[in-house]
Structure formats: structure tokens, C-alpha cells
Length: 469
Image (cartoon, rainbow, N blue to C red):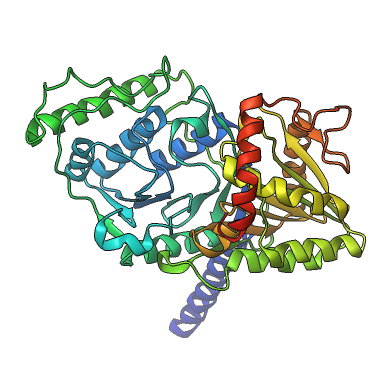
């Protein structure tokens, strides 16, 4: 009787174990199916909301690396949420490029007191002049090693539609294995000698860096002299009030919403193994991994290539690959800034010098006419393979600045990106073979004369310094 009971128990135990194995297998399969879920973020609203949601939903870790982080409306919004995450026990770390970013010392001190760790990349000091021309151009946010946002948006007003003059931008949301690699990238940057802690020294209140009439979240500074530069306690109280007010205004839900519980991976399928490319340890890699990947994708294209770049002065090897693609019959199309919409005249002068050669090769060029600045950096190959990046497809990105990119074979994402490009083309001009927009007689029909004169003055220097643009 005891042996029969023992056999029955053993059989039940084996059936139970088998059931658990089946359940575990289903869980693993489900995780694999969503291992690299990708969603395009093309509008100011969805890009801002996705960042807010990820920060609010974080449980263990938030890492942010950016070229620009400003004390303005969206900067205050993000910093107020990062502070609250740190207060609830999440580890929060930020690396920002020193050249393009600025936070008042009092705000940095208050964030540090709240648990937010901040470092700057290549601080501009006399002892670091050698790195002054090498900047952190990464734009990434990663949460709990499982969700990330990668693309072209910085953390300041113009990238979220809050300024007078704004940017057209593109990011991609990532959930899964690729997000873990994004975290590896950040960890290497954080541990490197390229990023240094900030040492606050001047605790005086500062006015927010916002466009006139656009002060929404950022609190105005007290009257000059109210807070002495050496008064840390008063400066920190002021900074705490700034973030408190910012969070209160943000909670009104005028543009974005708090505590949405949005799942940005909902409804997404496997992207086919997305890959994250980056410059390890905050040091520019040679050969540049993103330029190398772009050349490989260009050489592998059979039918079509769509490129988006705000400052298209391609490295010589990338241009050669595009010309090879044209010779084998691949349709190559470029969307970039016009003279009226560009925000970097020197780079536009370099592009203008190259433009006749690109047009002669049969590359279709569309110039965005504005009024915003075109800032997208992405490509689609054969309506299937997508790259979304911080890389400008230029020599500066190839040789000097650190960059990041997501690459995936995902027809659904490619279709969404192509639809977004089509929408932008309604506000763009296609150039004829002579470089003049079709239907126009003036090569710069929407630019003011002062801009045309400035362009003419910059074209010769840009030709001499092309490899540095």
C-alpha cells in the first residue's frame, strides 16, 4: 500500500513538474516575442509623454545621457520627476555634455541632496583643452534595463514644441534585450574618465532659460541679490521650490499627463533582434560603428534607401557607398534642411557644396521648408531595415562626437517611419538637377537675403574644413 501510494505521489509530482515546465516555457516564449519591441516617437507630445511615463514607472534604475540639458520648461519637468524617482528609492544618474548644457548650481545641489547623481562630459577647463572639440552627442534614456528611448531629442524646450523656434525630431522606444545594451553603454560612460562630477559653488538663483512669453513650468528667479552666491541653504530652498512648482503645473495635464500607467510596448511584436550601436566608454571609436553599419546597409540595399539628416555632409566612404548604390539602380532619397530652416549655417554650407555632386549621381533631395528646424536622423533600407540615431551622417559624428543608434529589421517600424517622412514631404521642396526647387526660379525661395549672403561667405571655409563638419 505504501509503495502504491508512493508511485501515485511520484506520478503526480512529475505531472506537476511538467505543468510548471510548460508554464515556464510559455513565459519565456512571451518574453522572447517582446524581446525587442520598438515604437516610433515622432511628435512632440508622444515623445514627451513616453519619457514622463518611463521615469514615473521606474522601480530600480534610471539613466539619462544627453547632449543638451537646460534649465527651462521641459528640463524642469524632467528634473522634477527624476527627483521624485530618487526620493522613492530609484537610483537616478545623469550625464550631460558640458558645452551645451547648463543647470544652476543650486539646482544641482538640491538634486544631489535628493539622491540624483549628475556628471558632465568633458568639462571645459584649462586642463582638458584636448577634449574640447569632442562632445557627448548621445541622446538616451533607459529604465530598469528593460525600456529605453534613443534618438535625436535633447532635454530642452525646442525638442518638445515649447519654444518659439522648435525642432522636428525622431526617437524610438525600445523594450527588451536591446535596452539592456543601452544600459551597458551608460554604465561604461558613467565609469569612464570622460565624465566628471559637478562641484556647485554659486548658489544664487538664476532666471529660467526660456523663450520670451513661454515660461510654463520653470519658476522665475527671485530679484537679483536676494540669494547670495555663498548661501547654499537659501539656494537649495529656491531650487526645491522651482521643482515643486514645476511638478504642480505638470500635474494639471495641460500638455502631458502624470500617472498614466501607459504601456508603450502594448500591441508591438518582435522587431527581429534590434541592435544598439554606441561609442564605448564615452570615447569615440575608430572605425566609427554607426558609419560602418550605414555603409554595410547601403551596400546591401537592393531597391531603395531613404535618408534623414539635418546636416548632411557625409563622410567620404559613406558618400562612395551611396554612389555605388545609385550605379546598381537603387533609388536613394534624402530629406534635409533648407537654407530657411537650418539652425547650423556652417554645416549647411558644407552640404550646399556637396549638393551638385549628389544630384548629378541621381540622388533625390528634398529640403524641408520650415518653419521648424529639421532634426531627424534616420534611414530606411528596402522598406524593411531601420536605423534611428543621434548620428548626423557627417564627419563630425564619424570622428569626434560620441553617438548612439538603434538598428532593426522591422517592416512595421519601417512602414511607420516612411509614413512620417511622407507627411514631412508635404512641407518640403524637391530639388531639380540644377539645385533649384521644382517650380521655382530662385534656389532659395523661402530664405531671407541675409541668410543667402551668410551662406555665400561660409561656402569656401566649409570646403576647406569639410572633414570637420
